[in-house]
Image 1 (cartoon, rainbow, N blue to C red):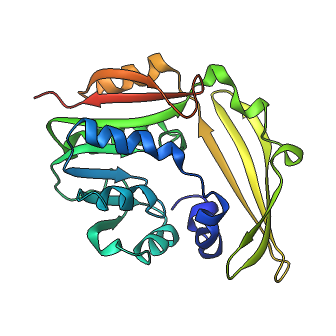
Image 2 (cartoon, rainbow, N blue to C red):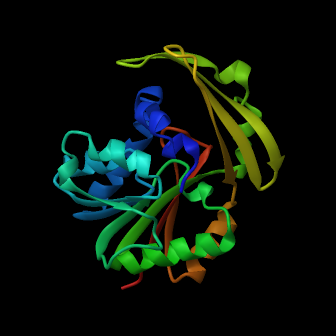
Length: 243
């Protein structure tokens, strides 16, 4: 189903303009080139920004997401017909053989239940060709990101969205029960005064746990990299399906 931030039609429609800087995707585009990927599975594709970046480079892309409203936004973008969009998740995929699978941003951390996480890893593994790679990121729990800016005072901003008007937004921490951290986003639409909220929870797995989970599902862990745009804050895992 996905959190309201992704599944509410009004919120999905302003997701991109409220978060326009997607420089975090540059590293993933570079890795697709590094690994010579011609077929890519983007798990948790959201509004399709990364999938379309790859499609622009002639790569065959399948994007899957459980939030129908986000997929509606993705399908309406220029060039969207070059991507195969699926409503679902990594456990509901049709037969695929891709060179690279990705989960960008908070996708991995939003999968909370151990059984769901294991099923996701198995689903991606089944979609990879032998020798194919799986790349995803997770915030390093040692960095404790929630202690710095997850407050209304530090996160509040007002964004002018074309065709929508001013949208005020902020995030507030709700609960920290490590490794789980819960927070609430709030949006206020100036045009009609509507206030919308979305509650989310992220699971902060440490490096050893993620590596062990990957190995348990048949992967080889090839590398754990630093996110170039957020050094010391993110762990980028590169795993592969053995040949």
